[in-house]
Each structure stands twice: as structure tokens, then as C-alpha cells.
Length: 271
Image (cartoon, rainbow, N blue to C red):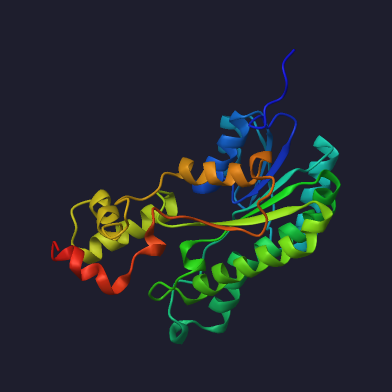
């Protein structure tokens, strides 16, 4: 007689926002590989359909910053699959300018994309997650604990996701729902590829790989992450293996967060 392993996700239902590309797609593949029913949600049907067909999942189009649409998504998930066990709030983007260069519309868009999406998705999912004793994984960023140049809206939104994570963990941990956040650094995703192409041209570098090498030169692991490496962290936090982890902020950045900026010059000097 065999027993179900804690690594087995069979019978569990996982809802992933921004699941059509990059980290979201890798998360869907990881959970599906372990037997979970994955449901992808986002605004663009083509990439959602492609990922869903590849992993054997379902997909729904919706703007996850819109409460009415998210209510419909959760209701559809419950109607089709009978439960909801894990919510991965992965949608994000916008906010790539300094404060002085950010107008009101740009500010609103950055907060909507990076914060409101996670707030609305998790809020509307809470009744189902309380019922199942489920997990929430919020995908923040290294920008959630540090500030990059000219990314004010993005930085503020990603910082705020840490507060959302802790508030959910504090209020709903007593009701059996665990909430944690991950903060990736550079990850080889389509969005990062576009940034590397822009950086490559600006810096006069020969290739996208050279651009990735340049931006990770001071990261202790000296490389960007693969989407599957981020998915592994999400899967851990969305499984029974992290059963006593609640309110945590897991940095998955190759060690970038711990680099002491004033001493970088010593590395470059070979000391």
C-alpha cells in the first residue's frame, strides 16, 4: 500500500495570475508536473492558451485588478474543480521611471499592475482558501526590498506587496491560510530579455548574454535565474513542505541582496 507523498500535488487546484509567460508559465509547469490542476488567468488569451495546452491546464481571461472579473474567475474555478488550494499572485509590470518623471496616470498604472492585482486576487480567493486551508504565494521582486534607478512605481508597488503578504499572514494564518512572498532578482524571462536588449544597445554590448553577464557581474552566483528555479521556490511555499512557513519573504536572487555596495570596488580591483 502506498501513501501520498508531501511532494505530490495531485488533486490540488492552483490559480496563477500572469501565467502566460516567464515565471508564471514556469510555475504552472512545475505544479502540473506534480499532478496539480493549474488554472492560468491573465488578459492575453494567446499565451495563456499555449501554456495551458502544454501543461494540461485550464485558462481564463480576466483583468485581475478588477474585482468583478476576479469574482467570476474564482466562481468558475470552484464550479469546474470544486476547490481552490493555492493562489499565486504573479501579475505585474509598469512603473519604470523616476518619481519626478512619473505622472498621475503612470503612478496609478504601476500600482494597479503591481499591487492592486495581488490585493484583489487574494481578497476574492480568501473564502475558498479558508475552506481548503490553502496557501497564497505573492511574487514580489528584489525591488521589494531595494530600489533600482528610475523604477519608482515598480519599486513602491513591489515593496507594498511585502506589506500585503504580512497582513494576510497575520490575519488569515489563524484561519489556516498561509501567505508568503518571494523576491526574485534577474530572471531570464521575456520581460527581462527586452530590458537586456535595451541595455545591450545603450551599453554597446555584443549580445543579450553579454548584457545579462554585465547586470549580474556583482551577484555572488554571477548569473540570472532560470524561470524554473523561481518556480521551485513558489512550489515549496505552495505545498505541505512549508507547513510552518507563514509571512516569510524569500529572496531568490543569487545572493544579490547581501552584497555590500561600498566594497564592490575591491572585487573589481582584484583584492
